[in-house]
Image (cartoon, rainbow, N blue to C red; front, side, top):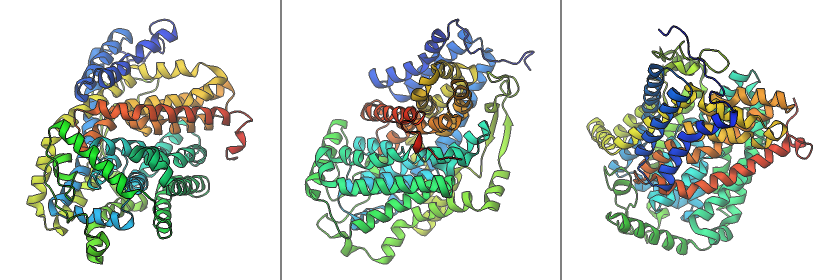
Length: 581
């Protein structure tokens, strides 16, 4: 035991701005090495971790043993639960590929719409939102990324689309966990925070489907598909606002995603977009070019373009020629089997998250470990024991374990068998070895920055802007999620800081706590953790820098929109938008 517990100094290097800039160096290192120098993600993560450790020990005077132990805890948390969730999400997908059933799923989506722009909204935004509601932690990006590739998208385009789509639902993801966390830390009722968030993120929901059309097919896609994009975005946003304000913030994403799916199906019965063949040809050209540049084999146009060779390489499915009408080839049995894995995931997660006695039982199996040299020995800047000192080993309640259960059931139903499942898992593990290293290094970086006080220093510096802080408050959530890959973690870092800064500046505390949550949703797409998940899922491991350059400006642009919205909500200009309690 240390004789004296370590309490971070908010400004250990003198002026606050100096300490904040030095505290930002690990993040600068990450984004420069990844986005400018184009290093491999695991090397960028390890280099940023090294910088964070040096700053923590030399600048913030954190005991060496605590800094190193905190880094190890972060790595362990990165591997379990984060990497475990992504690993099992991809393994579940590969089971469907090995069985040959994944092509039937493509036919199901073709039966709804064979226009890739509509499929991007349907899969990445609506279905991904449903996965975010139930699982979160990167699973939506992993699952929807490979699904888009099966629909003919190139890997880089698929990765960018799913990362951009995984924004508006994030605040209410995993049954509202980010908002529940913020409520627990601040003492503000979680339902009140959720209602405020429900008056912020719907603006993103309105826009994102249009942006997905643009990413899929440029301005032509927007011109030809704006109707379905707008209707889906408005439906998602309005139902998100209604659910968060009047029903249940925990169920908000489920209600919104299902409403979005329903409105697409209904609308396409009366209207179909033009230009389907042109966009398919364009996607095919992009796919061929990407594969040629990477020196990878090119699947026939009628074949499966993303499963085996593009994602994790465990299997390759074949598909009937594109000229065969999907609707004629489908029957009720094929549709049921094609949708079975995903309906099973929804059912399992719904039971685990929404049935009280099941949720309580699963939580009771968690094993809490007081992490050595951190628990009780590293305090927060407020002098309280740091909650990160307790590692929660969720061996059964973890979403990854639930996905494993689903994988076993699917393997048996599909005839792959336990032996086949074991082969798939082994192959996926080999392909993901560098992904594991990247995720572990990024979470190590987050833990070191958080435990040493670097992150709080950055936040306190930004919060020192007085009334103008309302315009800047989403940036804290953006930074927190970019560092940790989790909106929940961003709230754990900054929710109380937002609350305190709001009181000092005479701003509504609930507004700024909600702003932290909303800002986090647009930071997730540039998180190195999520970039690695996307790259792994679509077979671009090592090219995270390319994906980052594709999505960085979208993230910054949406952040500016949120900053303006929330800043104006703190004034009489838009204060009428906020709920009243």
